[in-house]
Image (cartoon, rainbow, N blue to C red; front, side, top):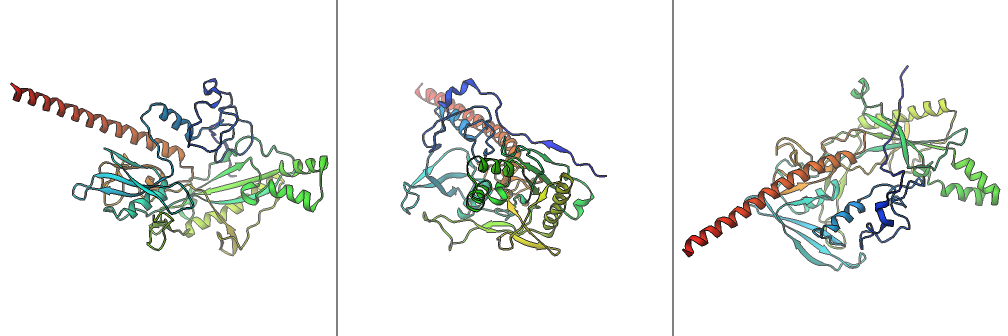
Length: 414
């Protein structure tokens, strides 16, 4: 009999308040966020709404790193600025500048332009936007792979009502899952997948709890204590399983640009070509079988229903399914060992431009069945170390050149 191992899912949340947060005074930077939370750096309050930003900052988000960067006095952030062209020296391939447009009103087409110059340049605008900017700049593309191999994690959802209250809507969105469907002979026919056991009920699938409240009030005419008990009984028993499936790097799945599709500022919009191969569709169909078995063993009432009108609806072997995007965009400037089969090297340096680095999951040649965040962080550390080495070497060369020039001047003076 096959074993299914439920594993705890790591969540970057805090169980004990950090006194160094000083009630958030370090984390309110003008322009970083338009909403100033009342509480900062507190312990997890179990709101089950950690995404995209924890309301009490019990979970890490980029504002903390930005705040530390601002403290150095060496970081300058341009708000409401959009890069639109990467300029390079066609003779040696080195990037010389990045041109950007600044706007005041997001509903207006008016803007001013500016130019950023430096020694090293980094594009870190995710897999889709990095590719769009590179293509829109008409840069050299030796491998022809800029924008190619676009990947994401397609999800299928299955939801059921547990026979008893299970504490739904407490804690982070996901604290446990099943990660044992990653290897085996089945990989010859279908991809790997992982299972998230959600704490936030049917929200992703049906929009609950909003819909539950409306149904209880408008259709069932509940109010007061009866309404409260109805919602507790219903919402606290909701179980959602999210199946995150691997997608192979298909050459035809890609980001392109088209002069017919531009935004208000005149910048290219990304044009997406994306299709799920049978290798992945077979996996999505299989996950529905898995969910039925799990619900049956739990004694849970299966409410899963896929709407044929959904844009992501598809049929496979006589049954219909709906898949969701995981927003884990990857590929488009994949990492490799030669400039003929990849876009960047092991340090995320663009093969065609020695001082341009492409950060993010766009550099991942495969995506597997796990979230991309930790891989992005690891690759970013590798990149940062390499950039520091090169900047230190550059500064040393400049310093030696200045000393040599000074010595030459002294000799001439004598």
